[in-house]
Image (cartoon, rainbow, N blue to C red):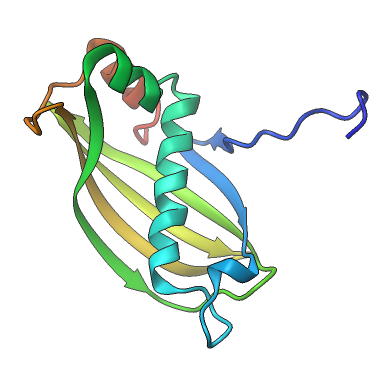
Length: 150
């Protein structure tokens, strides 16, 4: 990459109250059938949630270091609609539905062009080092509110 070319935005972008992360499907993401292995859709969504938080200035390593807390998935309902294949360019979309106390609810989907391949409704929680719920900070609540649909 030359100095005149901008560095790619590896954390994706926030567009219209939604986080969008592009992901390319590599050989390692597929199974013997040549399609993306089902568990990798969960990895794609986890990566998108992490990068969405990163763009909101909420960093996993800082949470762990500064307050011995972190995010965990409490519940996830998934629907596998169509398979993706090697070299597909996918778009992981994350929408915040609500955040209150220590829980947030999100809708995530994986798209190839205009075709939805996978959807997930996710409930995630912030917990302390002993696994107990920890209320979101005011800064977190403000950041989440920027992604709530108008």
